[in-house]
Amino acid sequence: MSAENTQCFKNLQEQFGRFRILIVGRANAGKTTILRAICNTTENPEIYDGDGNKVDLSQIEGSMERGIHNVENELVFRSNDKLIFHDSRGFEAGSEEEFLQMKNFIADRAKTTILKKRIHAIWYCIPMDEIERAIQRSEERFFDECDPGNVPVAVLFTKFDALLPKAMGKLAPADRQLPLRDWLSKAESLIEEIFDKADVWSRLTLMKYAPRSCVRIKDMHKSSNEGCSKLLDVTTNALNEEALQMLLVSAQEVNIALCVRCAVGNLIRDTDKVYNSLLSIANMSEQRLQELAWWFPHVQ
Image (cartoon, rainbow, N blue to C red; front, side):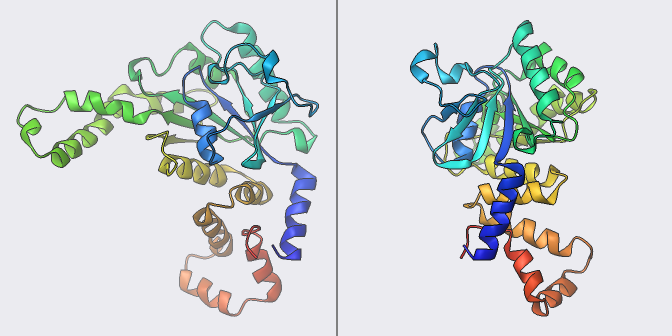
């Protein structure tokens, strides 16, 4: 990393700290699996309390997958300590105390003047393995009562491949006589029909505090998960501050494609002609080139 890039990243850290994400959703929605995929690890995170003290896991009852964390606790994976996660504890319909804790946490952390404590994005996980019950009272309350302010909220439709068996059941008998590749392709096309008919996304967009974007996550246990890359893309694009975009990009140094998109997007945002932008790169000042390089803080 060049001295200039190092200083740029240090300045971002001094101002904002690390990129902080609240992940919300009921138990077994796949939250832990998503976080591991984002941080490219199979390990559990280390947990710290609000004062930065490491939590003794032996004193926590239950398992991490069941969402046992206090929402104030910070989850940090050793494979990527540039990201801090907060877990909503998997609140369910009727869990009034946990819902209010999460609601108050968002109200405080979305607007706090202490920048290093502020949350920068919210990911809401909704599993598709029970699509008929995808939107429950907990989802309705969240999107009707929790004001995220300027913090972007993305919905993650997890376990999206759970719709495949439903699609296969809708195939005509003649389709099932086709070669495996062909009838699987037909089943895949029916998934969209099933998802649209369930009216999940359109219902969410009509709520008071509607999410800004959604991502479909399938093959959740595979390391090369396209949905996770898309999630990083939509989160970066939804951020309303260039500094926060750069902070998230710097935390995802293995995602070179994201770095390129942000750098080029920043370069050509004021013009519709890519050709002129390419000419400007050829004649760019050293200072402007350095600004472009800031989007690649991990590259020499």
